[in-house]
Image (cartoon, rainbow over the protein chains, first blue to last red):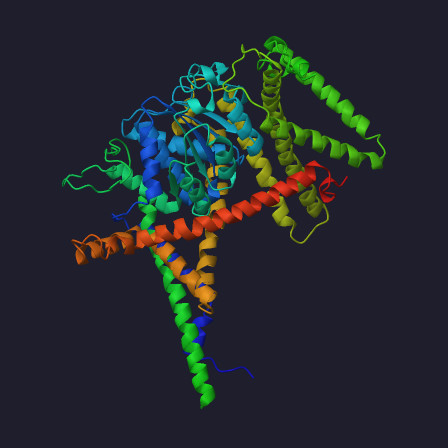
Length: 322
Length: 309
């Protein structure tokens, strides 16, 4: 015969749809609450920002963008903040993927949206050929990474439209003229949600300065490469997006209006400037309240689940004694 | 033999023909014809000869990458560079050939996408023709696939051939084809993809409530470290806790209790640096050794399961 359930038993075996409803309500609330959240940036995130900000004006960055829509909550914020920094510093970039055929369309949307945003703010937009080169998708990450390491000019020896609509080699564009080997790029940034990070680091980290923007799932792996010095900096997950945006808004070792330094950076005494044009607090800032609610709810669920378990055990033992 | 293969004169190096050149087109057409003849010839081979051929091809392909890894390589070689001795000749050959092999590997991998499409069509057209109870889903899949292909191709064609000034970079210049692609890809596929992935959040919450229980010492250690790491992802909580510590210990005396060490961010950083990352590094070592062993078995033809023909 089935034992009569007490209150704590019922809490333990609550219908999961109630949990889903609570999470849904909390997320909707979090996404609609617009409030400034103070932040303590992660060390690896500060290194990432400092590394990107070191790229000189007019320099060239290689971006391997290996993410698609399934992780856009994190990766889109990563790519957007990276592009905003590069565009502000007038840094040129070559963008490609070794991971997924959908990835090019996803980054093209991001570039278009940021260009439209900049146009609405009367800022110069980024033009293909002149400011960036989009070479698309390559199916084999392992072989392609070795090829980039050995001879980047041969591997990317393809033609794209120039600003007059004539097909020309990408190495004739202002973006790539000074690139003879992969190490000539000022920085290599991989934005990824997959194990292409391992391949890129293993094949390229001894040839070019590398930094990464990865999802929370890939974060622990990225930290092993960061600790070994193969990655100069890492932005991890949604917190990494918010960290980057927060540093874009406040700089590192840079005094705010009240004269106080908002984000301190121990590795260098020199200030790393903040971003002075366009948007700084964007996607990360609009998701961070929802992240707090979701994580708070997870902690609450763990605590309540355990209290219910112990209370239920105690109640059942007491019942047996009687 | 290797210096001959290296073709020291760059004008004669078959791996280094300039892109879009007539010589390259001739080489490509000749290679395709030879490939077709070779595949046609292979179909006449007796079945018992297929396994040795696969094994030999695997060994040759693997040997190339082993050689590429071991042999000294030129750095930043340009087209006019000439090798001075046999070592450089072979290094040049390896590097030039590797680029071609990378392209071959890319093309072969891209063929898998085509194979995937063929497989999907075969299964779902079969379901429709056999009037399977769930055939409505198959119809939706096939219609969606063709719509995306048609609009995606039209969009690509317009951007590549009909838009020399890159006017289509701005949404205001789009035509119905660009909007169609945008609705299908960005409006539907992207949203559904993200929605599917977001379901994980609901499962995590349910699992946290039902399964994350303190039933042993190990589970307790795991829960405590998980809670610290979760809290470390909440900027507001870390910030407030740091402010609290600063208020409680405004002037910590050097050499005694250091409140800096008890900040949540510091503890989380310690857990990541001293527990999480070393454990993961050990796992990566294990995976690497396993991959090496498996690679050697495949390369040397010892792995029977990998060469089924």
